[in-house]
Length: 281
Image 1 (cartoon, helix red, strand yellow):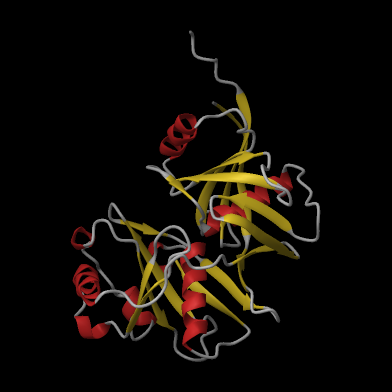
Image 2 (cartoon, rainbow, N blue to C red; image 1 turned 45 degrees about the vertical axis):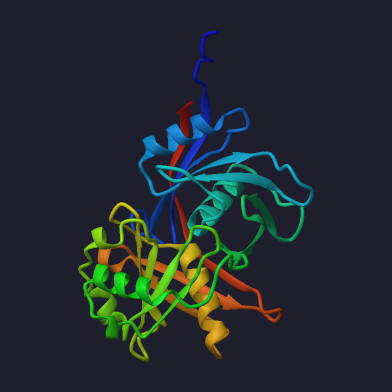
């Protein structure tokens, strides 16, 4: 049986967590993916060569406005932060209208709420699938991979809400930005590193995210959500704050975190539509 001929589908590329193009984390979105199989989606995601590509589908459960599947260059994720915000923005731009006050996204991690604050979007942090301190042997290995002594790691935790993030805290933002890691020491680990900015600088802390294959992610919503949950579990935090990420990659990632009166953590930022057209799939 001959393979079906590719057809044009609506396509968008966005920059997420930045107010200007080419300053945040790029995302590709295929907006008409209802008849695509997993192999098709994986092929497109590998071809775009971005950290994530998403595929919009009709919802399959009551209460959802749409369903999204999130693919990296090598596999599918149940949830990821910048794909959630970028997909919601692309869906709205294409004419999507939420049934209720908030957008409700269906994904592998369940239903994720996305709220609109003017032009800015924010997602409700999903529950952590794994939390608590890392094993000491793993902390030692991570420190070696980051090129710092074990004593430089002040605190550590799982921050896994789907992708599998671990997080370690250094003394400050300067130490985070000075890292020159050898990720061959931790080839399979997803490691976030955070350090607080000096008081009065505006943003609360700086983040870097290192993924398998020696890749540094520009701006990482899922990790930022996990860090926020970890920090709130440790003690009192402001009702809202800003974190920076991507500085070491010449990006301008700004992640806005807030906690509402119910205790829900919202992770948001700007999204910029950079490419709009069609893709043959």
